[in-house]
Image (cartoon, rainbow, N blue to C red; front, side, top):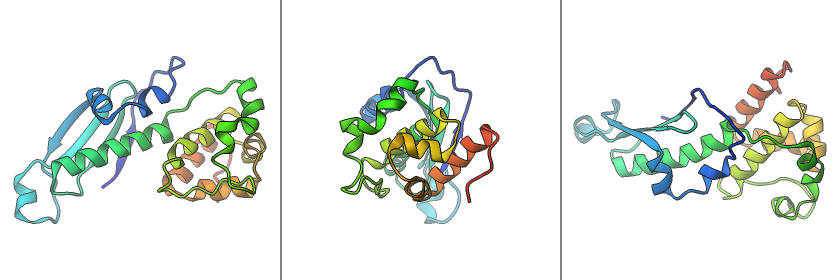
Length: 187
């Protein structure tokens, strides 16, 4: 089971990188950790041990759950990966107009595009989730208008939509942003 809930988040110009670049131990130290017995298939051992893990990241209020494995250690590792993903999906960094204007020309952004200048990252690429965070930040900064976001990112609208569709959670978050700005959901 995969679950992410956004609690009350207080943003005071806090950058997401403060949390995403922490080691697992440092990030875990910022979390309230609950373990409990998960129900469902898995045999007698699963029903007798508290192997499911719920993390609540105190600074942001994000919750994640991992309960697939019979091993608490595996579930804790999964929950930490999910927390990092949730930070990229749910926590928005504010981008100034100056940052937006120079984004497409930045060398650190250029390395995530292929030779044709397109975003073609798979979910297993380590650059995928940081790129998701950046793309959603840009989308928020331009009022969730896809054509404006694509222009800011220096890619085509079709490429941006394909990138957003590459993961269901990313697509869902993009549509949440559009709804927040009073725009129709992308189809």
